Amino acid sequence: MEGWDPNTKSTLTQIPLLSTKAGPRDGSAWTQRLKEEYKALIAYTGMNKSNDNDWFRISAGNPEGTRWTGKCWYVHNLLKYEFDLQFDIPVTYPSTSPEIELPQLDGKTHKMYRGGKICLTVHFKPLWAKNCPRFGIAHALCLGLAPWLAAEVPILVDSGMIKHKDDATSSGES
Image (cartoon, rainbow, N blue to C red; front, side, top):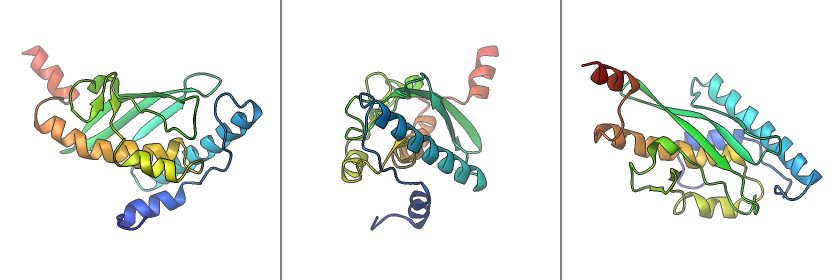
């Protein structure tokens, strides 16, 4: 964690680390891993809310916990930009991190792969590999999606690639 800003360090140290190394094919061990994932997500969400930094909602999209969906948002110039969020848990999880998708932004930035998968290869994937199996979904959101949104949304807004929902509504009425 050398070289990290104090805020990121503080946030990361408050997200519980996971201990069960299990993926979707591992039966009862996967159920234990999911319990740890939920515990970490609840802690991260609670911490964000208490710091007035609430920026996502997420839930398992199926009973197996292999598909996750939700919303994330970023505030830029006092305007809230909201996006659908989704990802599947890879069968090789937790050795392989989830590929986080923001389908509405597909094709709008070069820091994204087909299908709206955000680019996390250079900065996040080595960090994930080093911390496997202790990192989970909450860590992927904290260290993957959050910095990606902070870096990309202002550029996308300023370049006109995305518009605030109020701007899109008012320009459609003209």
